[in-house]
Image: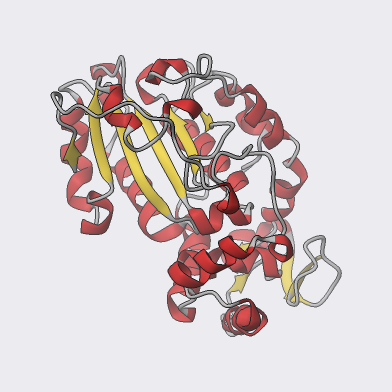
Length: 332
């Protein structure tokens, strides 16, 4: 983890947004894979080993691996599989392992992923604790804000807080720009106290680390911690041994030094709490866009490992499916 220098000074300058790859664009402007810019396709090839001419072959290779797993009922439409291939640089084996982990996490945490829909988490999202900023950063990365220090454990459980964060990530990773450019996170620990630590068990730490490192198809490019009190070191001591060296190098602690944060994320797209030029953080617009995907989340619950979804009356067979995958499920 890197701790920013308190006395380091940098000449003020306007951010340069690379709009050809989505930099500085509205987070709600989504692009189809067939309509990506030449610059974004070049970036995907350079960083992710993705070649448009090989894409169909690569998707089918992953689809075949899913078919060979007798216990797994997965979405297998192109858009869904592409996010796993991109997250693991088109390495088939690593992409398939990530997809298995993605569904296995739902088996191991069945209660947390039951009724995993925006409507079931409305009571958490209305607390304005998390969401994606309305504008992407200079490199087209989606910026996730989590105001963990403002969480009141009497209003929602730690499990529901985790679920609310994951469902935001699920919605955003649908976008090819986010799949290719990645995600950066701002963790605001202002007001963190012992009443939070008492509700943050090692099992919660393990779930968070497992999600980021092994179980979610996103490129997590950086984590920026702000307003962290000395107490945060207790949480860090629990989490740090679980974190890979790769992720450790992407964690930055800024304290209250927002100028340090601006060296990574431009003030032009940040809320005023973080020295930004926008108004106060407000997740209303993002959560509304999330609510509009309710049906997608309902359908997604019909997928997973057989043992997990048997109670829903799902079996492997061929039938019509909303996602139009090559391998489908039917409902008894």
